[in-house]
Length: 535
Image (cartoon, rainbow, N blue to C red; front, side):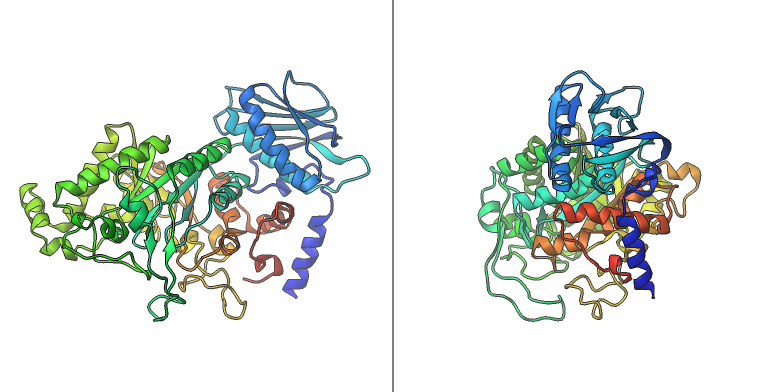
């Protein structure tokens, strides 16, 4: 019965949206929507007019995306704004990511507090057109004024390309998905035990050795003992990194690279064993999990290596934040390493937990001196952290709550809501889900139920800067599988980040059936479960 009702809802939603309450159309939900009289007909002859050269780029991206929906590519020109067109302009009185979208009988006007705000207005217009049936002339869009801006400044999506690597075009496609959902941060996980994925010219062995593993485990980790026997890996060259960063920038997405330390370092240690606490030998990991082998915190050459790596990373990534990991770094090797024990004694540290804090704060200071700031997983709290470090809470929300109470900035990415490598229905076997993480499922409803402020008072809430969804790829070897895990759950996290305080799951569910039209037209691969009434 539930499936039948949802099919009816989907059918109703596929009908043209004649009413101009476009809050019932757009994901994430707009802040306000005021209906007006009349319609504007968008036709293949409609021109996108940009008030500046920089807005022409945003207009062209919109025109390309719209063509997938309408079959026609609109002309884009830098010119004065006119009636009968889609007009793009900036008004500095608005906040940076704020926009106003006004559809009248004589044209469409999108005004943003910056180019970024205009871009978000175009994403909303894209969804409005997708929700409107085409008539003989074009798309009759109901007159309306939408005023909109995000709740959280940080709205992120993480992509792990270490356990499995993806092509440049596939990473760009991932960025397209983020852009559609008004996500503004791309957290790019680039180094791991199973593969180092970024070219560092000073250390060529990272590309030759650390980027490749001898084989890969088949099936579930800790259960399977079967390997495929095939050498696997690859690297993103610096030119490819620049290309991806530029592509993201055109879509107003800031790229945050993650260079893991001190743990998840086996690939780097395989290439440069002198950076470990033991003499090795090391081997790039062929299975998943947590290795006891980490960077040696007692050797100066470790910090020299990391600073040299980061020097090249800073040249490639202009955004202020660098993610330096800090998670899942066992202390076993440090406890028996003479270099690490000497460091603890010389620095007056209490134990190995404080040694990790020393490690993190030393790298942070180096980055701060170069105008950058760090993000670290919530394990960096153990042993103490500086006030300037941003904590990404992944082990539930407790780490984020603790950090906010200390006065540190926080990004909420709890695995129980935001890890979309997890299964997405309550019975993954019955629903024939592809292989995923075996923990409790993260359904669309579960993802949508995240409250980033839970457990915090009004004063503490100011330190919650946003939310992020994370896609780890131990069990995801193809981009089709990756999209299946991302969509539609990213929409839930996008709405939390953009429309917090204005959420309604039933309303969101109705709008998702319209957003599905965009997924279909743009050729995205998405999981069908929610749309079929399965949770």
